[in-house]
Image (cartoon, rainbow, N blue to C red):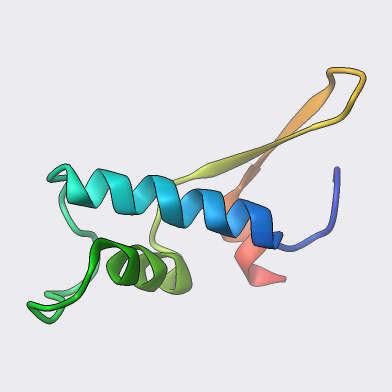
Length: 77
C-alpha cells in the first residue's frame, strides 16, 4: 500500500470539503435526519465518521504510479 495504512489529515479535509459542497448543492444526505441547524460540514464529518461514503482514495507517487484504496479500508485502521 502506498502511504500510511490510515486516512491522512489532508485526505480527511479533502473528503469533508468535497462532501459538504455536495450537500450544500442539494445532494441527498446519507445519514439519519440531522438536526435542523446542522451545517453541511457537520453532516459531512458525521458521514465520514460513520464510514458510509462510497469514496475511493487515489494515492499517487512522484513517478506517476498510483493506487486506488477504498475509504472503508482506511477507516478500519
